[in-house]
Length: 161
Image 1 (cartoon, rainbow, N blue to C red):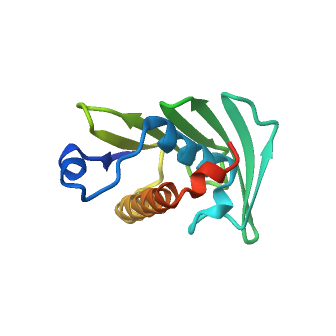
Image 2: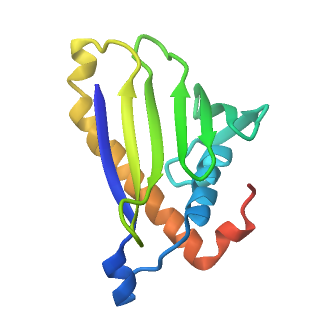
């Protein structure tokens, strides 16, 4: 299973019309890094997150969603890409998420989200993929909206990096 979508975060047309604030790659990276280091700050984040031995290019995390505990490793390529690789949890195939910052043309920036199953999915599990795709798209749009709000009000300038 592979699902991919783009979210435009800087638009040349919107910037020219003054409809939407534009932010730098560094500012967006700061926000994405916050998603790694402090995911509990986000609306749909875990109740608690523990970063184990964070390094510049890799962070091991334990995420607490109520009584459910998940473990993952996040690879960081500064100002380019995050790769979230979860440990297997039960019988479900783990799904890796890659988030990349791309600039397809001058003054345009997009985030590319790629979800990939790391193993074979059962027929039952695969039957839920449409729901997953919709939920992931919604959650990613919410994250971008929240980051845009924090960037606009200066909150990310105070964020821990």
